[in-house]
Image (cartoon, rainbow, N blue to C red; front, top):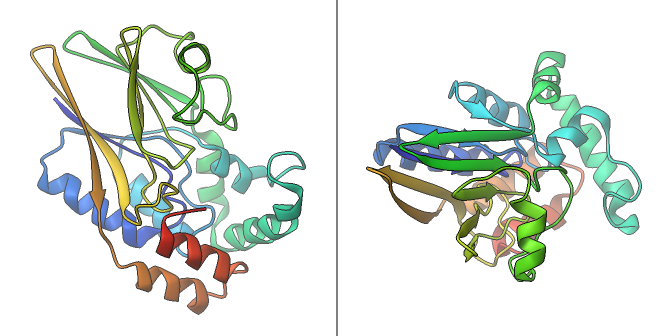
Length: 239
């Protein structure tokens, strides 16, 4: 069984299409999507439609929640709140009510078992769409935040846009990185493949180049409200 885990697309349909093309070439058996589909990118509607067209497991991220009900004080730095609210309004204007209802209805976690290997997947933590768990967190804190709700062999999440893998006390924790908006300094789409064969597990991060300048031009073409900031993130792979 070969499973592709993708997340944090953020309305970057150009990157998403490249990732889906690569997944198809690699003959993946199953795809799981761990949230943040539309918000902050120039093609939110197309991104949602591409994900829905996969007819696969999809869970909700914090940015999906933002599209549905707006961004609240305390959820982002105060100095960024007004601009991010303007971005949210722009995203909402690009979507229809059926697409918004789809985001609202998404579950918040996913549990899989293949050949005796258990996988628990969520967007940020099993209990929150918003908590930030970074790669350098202490072992005990990492275990407490991510692994105590359900027993599993692999724990997979998104949200932080920084790809990594750590094994702590027999539990393997994997962050997928971001398809559409990486923050780890590598300006390429990121996703994870998990291969399970006869109980053996192999994991890999995949980085896919895509047309960065096309996306940067889309922000301008579609009159996105925070163009320069988003172009800088796309080009640098840093927030």
